[in-house]
Structure formats: C-alpha cells, structure tokens
Amino acid sequence: MKFDTRAVHAGGEPDAETGAVAPPIHLSSTFRHSPEGPRGDELLYQRSDNPTQQRLETALAALDGAENALFFGSGIAACAAALQMLPGNGRLVVQTDCYNGFQAQVRHFAERWGWRVDWVDLADPAAAEAALREPAQLVWAETPSNPLLRLVDLPKLAELSHAAGALLLVDGTFATPALQQPLALGADVVLHSATKYMGGHSDVLGGVLCFAKDGTAAHNARVAREL
Image 1 (cartoon, rainbow, N blue to C red):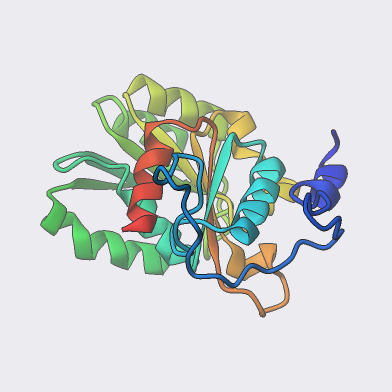
Image 2: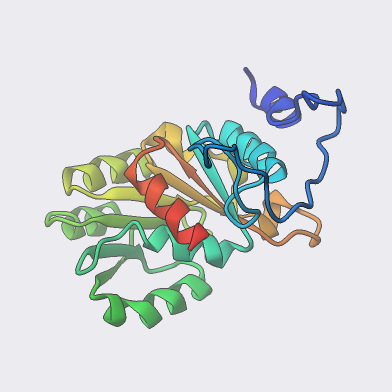
C-alpha cells in the first residue's frame, strides 16, 4: 500500500457499532470491566488507553511502517518515556546536534539515574564508528537535526548500533514519515514531535514513539506513559 493511501485510510475504518465514517471522540475517563475482572485487552482508564487514541496510534504506526505506536501529550513527554528504555547505569550515545529541550532533559536526569552519556557527532561516520566500538544500550540520533539540519547515514548507524548491542532511536520530527522512513533503514524506534511538521498548523501538541517491534522497549515506554 502506498504512503498516500495509508495516510488517508489507516485508523479511519468506519465505527463498528454505529457505522460512523468519522471516528468519534471518546470522553469517558473510565470503562466498564467484565464481571470476572478486567482482561488484558480491555480498556480500563483514559490515561492508559482509549478508543480515540488507539485510532490515532494505528494511523501513526502505519505511516512509519511500525508494529506499534504510542502517543503522548508532547514531544518531550515522548522523549522522557523513550529514556525509560535505558537501564540504570546504561550507556547512552546522543547526537551532539539535537533538540535543545532533549539535551536539557538528558543532563537533568543522567546523574540521578546513573547513565553514562557520550555526546557524539553522529553525522560524522568516523566519529560514530569510534563511539560505538564499545557497548551501549541506546543510540539517539536526529536527522535532519534541529537546528542545523545535518543528516545521518541511518543504515550505517543502525549497523554500528546493533553491533554495539544498542537500540537505535531516530528523531524524525523534521522529515516526518512522508519524507523519511527510519525503521525501513534499520532503526528500532522513531520519535516525532507531532507539534511540528506532522501537525503542521500550530494547533496540535503531541509526541509519538513508533516501534519496529512490539517488544520490551515498547513495553517499557508504555509503562512509563501509564505511570
């Protein structure tokens, strides 16, 4: 299915109960449980999940070619949840030229959570290769970068990251899925600030994480969102 078709149709199926072609906005804060207690697939509480959010996440996952997507109240909230994929005392390799708000977030929490953080020019293949000769848990790249619009060789960085035992997260905010598909190039996670070009009209605040596999990393980010 071509990207334009996914953009129009993903997550937009008619409502199963009413046949409505426009997804309704569900306002309920809580949901009724089964008499025998909540099942794993049941909705429980608005903060954890809701049908409107599920529709949006289905659409965003389809745009990025992901198995799973998680939506957040802001881009920096998505960043905070993504950092929960990093174990205590883990090594984080971060692109030097990346969003200033995220840099501040890393510096604020790194010492408290016991991370080792290495700031590396990941747009320089030689610098990336040198940094990833030793093990790491998470590599955080941004391409095009904010604000200098530098580009990263994602297939090569994915190869280096995985050889070092690290997940590769790519902030693709500036390109959006319309122009760049990091998961198809080897990334494990894609982050977008939906506030920027994905929203496009300065009337949306949000963030999203899209996962190549619905595995441990996605689970940890989901728990961070719920808690």
